[in-house]
Length: 118
Image (cartoon, rainbow, N blue to C red; front, top):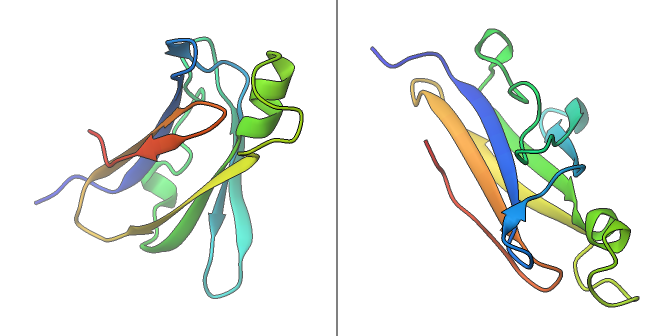
């Protein structure tokens, strides 16, 4: 039997090679109507202080993680005045019986990558 589902994330600033402290993150459930499920800000390790979707609140479905990277990099004085990346949106599908989902974001002012971590 798989452990109950949950969703966590962390953000790494690849432009400076460090965790991204102070990034605002929102989690949205997209169906049946889009609504915000959680909001948080990353700590000194680039992580929210709690899972965005704890096991007790887990429901399978389509979600979006929204990372306010433009504000983060502007606050650090990094990147162009006209932001290339502003809100980085990662659309994900969460299924029952798949255990813990961890979605890291590695980001610079000009690019990002993500994956399903552990």
